Image (tube, rainbow, N blue to C red; front, side, top):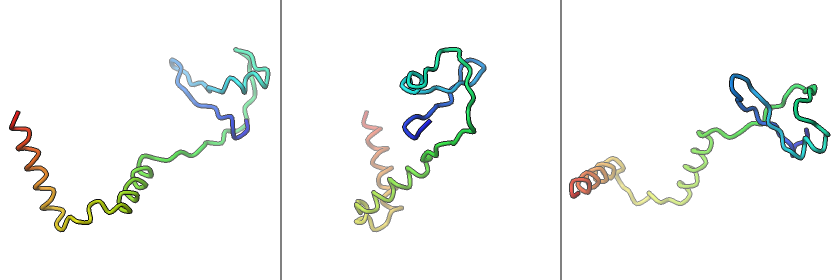
Length: 90
């Protein structure tokens, strides 16, 4: 497979299967049920949720949306109090 074609490991009942793009199967004349030899797989790294979270935090820091808050603890208490009061109004 080249870099444009990736197989995805899926669970099928009690077994695992490799899901490949249809174009790859057609271009290589693969038929359903046909057995093929596979090279050692190269796992494609993916971003973790932690990495994505860090990216979002850095973007927010660049915007300086919270720079006017002098005391974050007091601000958070105030927000909780407002939230509790709003919930009681219903």
